[in-house]
Length: 119
Image (cartoon, rainbow, N blue to C red):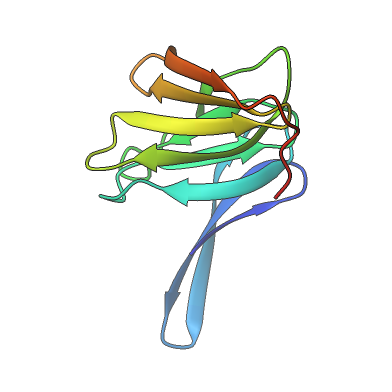
């Protein structure tokens, strides 16, 4: 079980029978608004309230890496494009939909909806 706490810490709970073990996986020091696993569960996207999107790879147990950042508006949501986990799509509060290459955070395509987006 992966979860985040308000101060930007990603936690992992390994639960077996009536016992559990907690591990701190990453500390990004920004409030995390959502966690999204890739279709193959190899990567986890961490969407923050302040704008950036981070990637965490559970098998590598390393730090979360900042993938995407925005200057004009905060990301409201992001998700992997399937099949595979090479691309993700994001939407900002200002209504900009973007497709990103996850390997290096390159923005491949943008579409402005010209409306403010709410979830």
